[in-house]
Image (cartoon, rainbow, N blue to C red; front, side):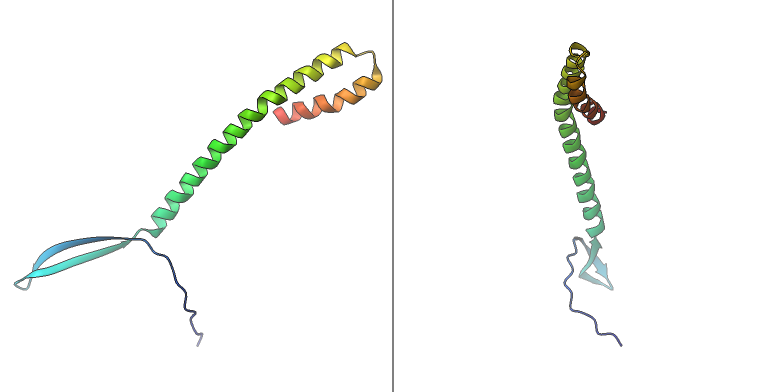
Length: 103
C-alpha cells in the first residue's frame, strides 16, 4: 500500500447557511460549502491573458513607429544612392530587416 504524502492544498470556498426547523428543533442550521477554487483560477488566468494582450498591443504599437521611420528613411536613402553599389549593399539589409519586422 502506498503511503500518502502530507500535502497542503489551498482551496477557496463560499459558505452559505440557513436556519431550519428540523424535527421540531428550530435551532438547526444547514451549512453549504462550495469549492470555488477552479472558478477563481479560471478568472485569474483570464485576467492574466487580457493583461498580456494589452501589453503586446502596447509594445507592438511602440515598435511600429520607429520601424516605419527606419524603413522610410532607408528607402529614401536607397533611392538617393542607387548609383553607389557599395552604399546600396550596406543599406539594403537595414531596409529588408525593418520591412520584415514591421509586418
